[in-house]
Amino acid sequence: KHSRAACALNPWCAFVLLWRRAWMQMCRDSVTNFARFGATVGLALIFGAQFGKFDSKGILEASTVSSRVGLLSFGGISMAFIGEMRALDRFAKEKKVIWRERAASQYSGIAYLMAKVLAELPSDAFLAGLFGAVIHFQCTLRAPATELAGICALVALTCASLGLAIGALVPNSERAMTAGV
Image (cartoon, rainbow, N blue to C red; front, side, top):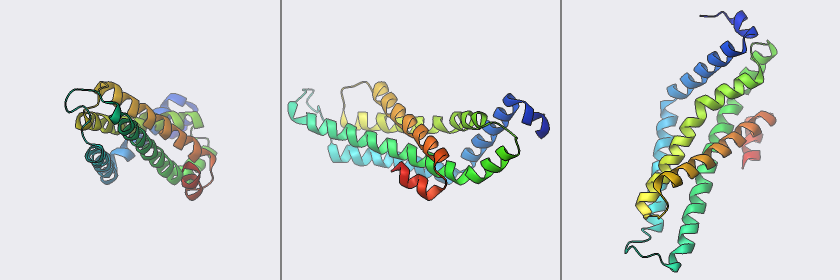
């Protein structure tokens, strides 16, 4: 193991320590993770109940186009906000600690950001992909489930990254949440 002084000079060591800290923090927050999982699946089930099955007879009808657009639009917006708000909330809460550690030259900003991204964004992608898969099967959408799940995951990742950027630019958590909306 490396000492803290050595890590202040070694960017790789700082990255590994920061990634481990972010990963452990995310894993320890089981209540939030369970709530996010439940909210994602619950939201997908609500959307499925609201929009129902599209192609129940195997025939594509023009009358279902507006419902499909509505389902995909509202689903995409929901996954975007869930990812962005999570990033804004968590990043804003850590900002004072980050400033203190960076003032002591313990690590670079890029090492922190990369560790944070690699530790947290996979959970956002997984949950958004799960949302896409659930609505695909519940509403019998024609697009392949993997493509829909991938698109939902990319939307969530993009907005979570935007949330990290906003959180870095705005001075406190209340303003960050307001700016993110």
